[in-house]
Image 1 (cartoon, rainbow, N blue to C red):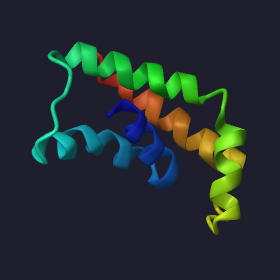
Image 2 (image 1 turned 45 degrees about the vertical axis):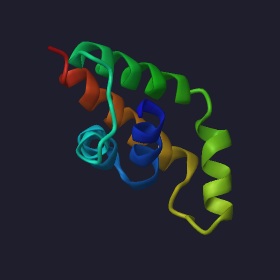
Image 3 (image 1 turned 90 degrees about the horizontal axis):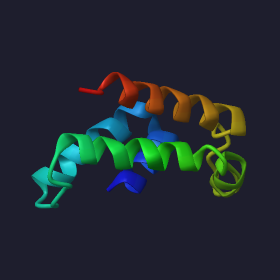
Image 4 (image 1 turned 90 degrees about the vertical axis):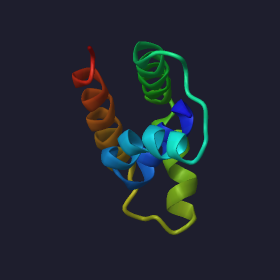
Length: 89
């Protein structure tokens, strides 16, 4: 779930990544037991992705998403992780 959330945030904007956990659960998916555990994995995945932004964004551009420059994806990732950090209990 965490990795899907990060990818949605990078592809479509932070709001998409933030909304995914709720949509996943509504569709019958099972999340980690506590909100803190869920947040941990989402932040961890977002931070891990920070080292791969250039690698990840290139195939998306090659597939026709020209707006997904490395800088644009970095900005989306930063906004997503910042929003997650603001969600800390």
